[in-house]
Image (cartoon, rainbow, N blue to C red; front, side, top):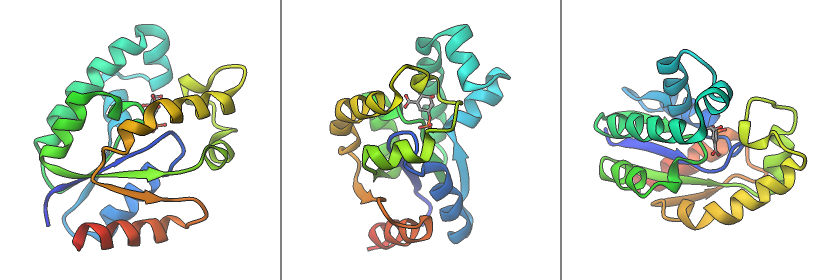
Length: 169
Ligand code: S3P
């Protein structure tokens, strides 16, 4: 198998952790986090890009980075939570890879990320409500993934095993 494995879902669903584990399990696979690539290119954190350059700038760069990564193979790609909102991104990623939505309930997402201040979209009065709104708005697009794996009350290893079993079927 050499197709890219692409993980999508809201902030806190476990994309980065699961992507790292998959790349350890699958020989020849490398894990790439689109936010890390973008932060490296810009030489600043995602929060700073949002603040100093704008979300629009971030989204355009995210689209370019994804278009390039989608041309590669043997990658486990951990997407930023908003990347699947773009049809261009969805199409590019589906072309050379399998897409997997890590479906997680908002209460669990909130518990996982409530003490993390690095997410610009959650710097607001009511981050829990914001997560619920984002999930409602974005889930129709997340559900366009080829596979949907629920993560509530599962360990990262259990999620990885389920993903690999689904993909390899
Ligand atoms: C975003 C999620 C973040 C990051 C940026 C925007 C979003 O990535 O790309 O802050 O729109 O949901 P994670 O999902 O990895 O936290």
